[in-house]
Length: 206
Image 1 (spheres, rainbow, N blue to C red):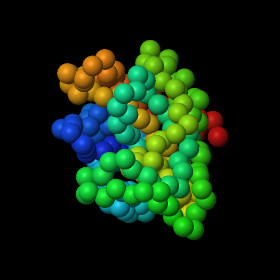
Image 2 (image 1 turned 135 degrees about the vertical axis):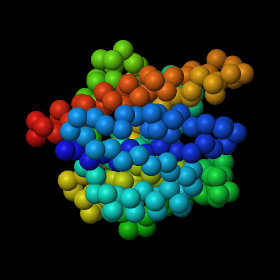
Image 3 (image 1 turned 90 degrees about the vertical axis):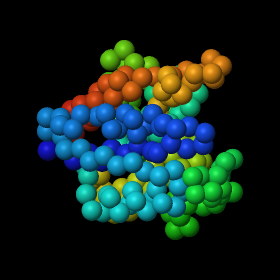
Image 4 (image 1 turned 60 degrees about the vertical axis):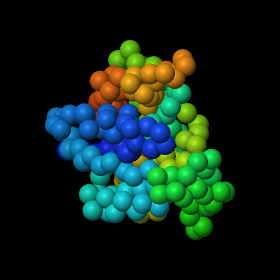
């Protein structure tokens, strides 16, 4: 049985929905040989990483897969790297707006995801859904969450895998927004199921 921690985010900015949490909520409760724990993280630099770290310590997942809103993106983007920096153009939901702040003083400048990224992208594309690898998770809360998960991988839980996926807006979010791409929750869930199945296959091969 593979234990997966699947995280999404609450809405932020002017949005009243977040496609990441909508997809995580809709993810199947049961998959063969997979146990899934779903949590919704606050869009808060400080609270999100605290909740994530505590949940990982308590649940001890085999895989941590965090999902975030990637507004303006035309495809699902699997993140390759997290950097040790927070630098925000807008405040988080707590009103905090870090400027060139190091996330952890005692940790490396960057961590690379230890998930099979190319295989994950191929699995999504095999479902007829556009996907690619991204080399920047930004400097907002998404990056902080990915960096925290990978720090735990490399410092505490070497058998754990962790990664981050950005997903496009929901169709309802782009109404009135000129030429903004979107993707349905159903399609995003289909992509996430393909990813989990690919991870299971890769882990069975090890």
